[in-house]
Image (cartoon, rainbow, N blue to C red; front, top):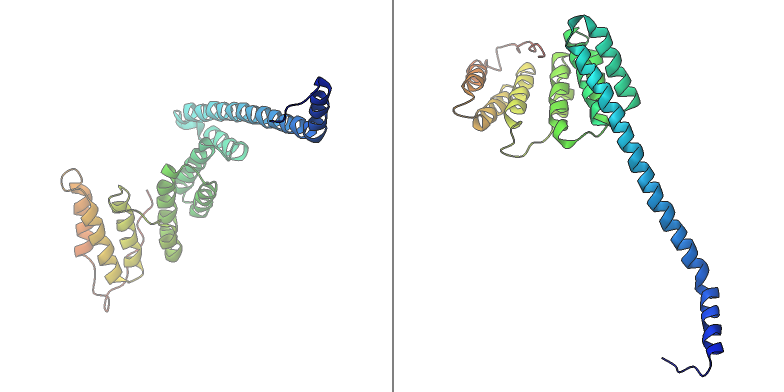
Amino acid sequence: MADYRTEEEQIELIKKWWNENGKAIVIGTLVSLVVFFGWTTWQSHQRARNESAADLYQQMLNASQLTENSEKVAGFAEQLRKEFPDTTYGVFAALQLAKDAVAASDLPRAASLLEWARAQKPDPSLVPLISFRLAQVQYAQGEFDKALASIPSIKDGDTWQVVFSELRGDIYRAQKKFGEARDSYNAALKNAGTSSDQEQRANIEIKLSGLPNPATSAPSAPEEVK
């Protein structure tokens, strides 16, 4: 570093540096503070929203314990879905409303609610459940292509493989695509457990053995959505 002869020269150099860089430092500091406090405020807001959603969801659960409170349950669920759509509680509320719609044989409303839930980009762990219920409803409506499209790709060994493969087989059977149905049922059997899922395996085997001749048989009617 250069050896300055006087203290005045050093002071002048500092002044010059400050004039050239001081404003940028101040602005940078202010921006950092704004970002920090903005992030802190946003986190506090999110925590408050989640707590409010959780309280409302608990009220919905409490009301659901009483059969005469079905309208109240629906009211809480709709409030959750509309006011907290970006929370898991909002998605759970939509699933409850869809279940009630199926029970009331209002399949179009059930499908709409499940499509809404999927569109919220929920926690990945909920996506298979939402997709399965949506595909079931679409299958029951006779919208077979939509139902097949709603079934997501599942990795080998995933616990959802069995139910998705079985449902895919049911849809293909209804479409008279018996070869595809047979492949799907076999895939379900391949991934089904050999000890704890005997009833499930037996049900799939019955469907597989009952596949008709494609040239002579009519498709089976869609099964009731559970």
